[in-house]
Length: 169
Length: 379
Image (cartoon, rainbow over all chains, first blue to last red; front, side):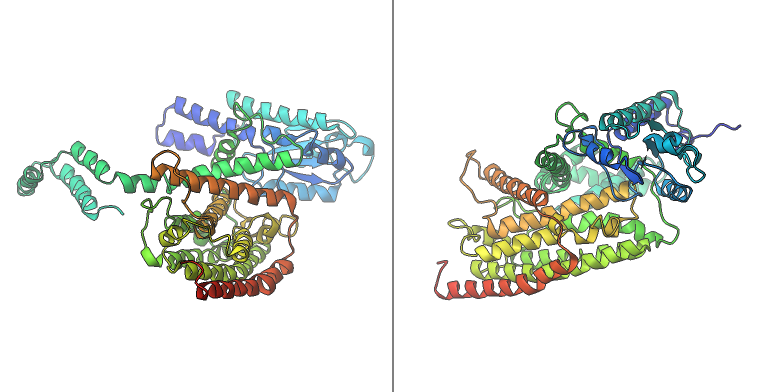
């Protein structure tokens, strides 16, 4: 398997920009990405009341800089909230393709994580059969604290993947 | 404005540095050295003298009311809006980004947008699609150069043409949502663009009539003259009707929330800015606040006494700037408060407001002003 490089890495190699500057740029970008995750929500099931509460007054998600958004093009993160049928899975793939590059997926609830109560259904798929999932939030439904904990885990992941150079696209 | 001779001299200086490297061009070099002896400058001296001679226009272009002021206004206004909205909804708002109260939140957002991928749709008209977000903040920023921040602190002194020029430049703004909506080649963007055009048309006519009433009352089209006539009493007091119409028209022009029909999130995805991703979307957001800034500065100049105010620091320049910025801050927070209070108007409701109520009322305001003028109100 050939080693993949990012466009940024290629630009830095081509113009002979030294590695420390590249690291600083990556660090700053990761800091910015960490504190401004704009999620779009794909709400199909009954986890949605818990999800609504996350941006409500008691569990305020905007403290972390997470701003729920209406349009896909500007977003960084899909939150799949609720059960994914086979027909809906196509739409998830479509949404994922429409987003710009540093993009993350969070599966909220038992259904997109591991099919949950519909484990023996013929028409339900897991989220990671369709798109690469970054954070799984279990629970049926997960409490708002659990969702915020999951988003903090995503922030941690964004910070760490710069350190070890895990994101290769 | 900038001294044209100094621009020519700076070009000449560039030429000189290039030519003096070449040994063969002796003829040119002697000519240059002759000039050098006669003008007696070295590059450093030249730069220093350029900076000192043109200090005022440079500060006006770069700091206030130029680039830095517009950028800082956009950043502070968006941060304040998010925080204020959150407090009105009993939330905390941005908190963890930065030392205190999420002050670095907007820098994080901007940097993230800067490092994000820009997607150009296959069907889009590439050149227009990429050009429009650059034009977007430029046109509202051009209107700001006409606003007097103090009696002698104007970037572009247009004299008695300044009010017509303001409306001429601001009248270009509706073209851009239409063009960008058309260039994106998406049904939501096209609907949003045409909605924006409808809104601008319905708001611009009452705005122009109100501004004409102000010009009649002040007796001049010059923004400085209009401000000077408000030394004793603000025009908002005799023309309270015109002031309210102008205020509503400002909110419609700036696409703020009670009238944000072109970017209605529930009906059209994000209106005419649906397809813009990454930093292009950042430009469209900045343009919204630039537009808002330009119109609210005009409102302050026409109705709220502009830079007039009691002398605080013993220096008329500083105190006038302080007063105009204070008035701006209060106006901006009132408009943000309206966003928290009111739901969105429908498209037809907004148009009916514009055509059926604001336009006749502004004509009535014009007649009131004419009556006051004939009875000799402002003597």
